[in-house]
Image (tube, rainbow, N blue to C red):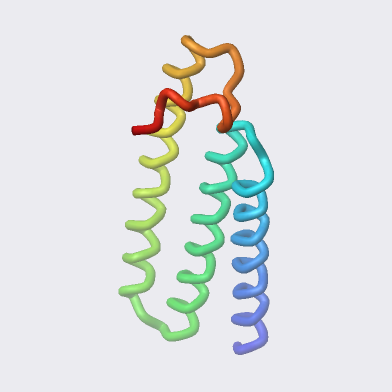
Length: 101
């Protein structure tokens, strides 16, 4: 059982690392949003693996709530990007100076 837990933890850590690299390296806002979603899925996989390992239903509930919040976050983020793409021809993160305070 511990070997499979280690495998799930490794895959979750790799998903999180790939998402973090995508956020840090890429400039396109759509790719950054997808990378954030990939990071959240890595965390959810890790949370689900620990819930199975500890046989705890609270982990499943927390994972379900986290998936719901991640889905709503991506919907709101994509809606903002669609509205922003109507005013700007290119969606790069370094060109959005008007969104700062």
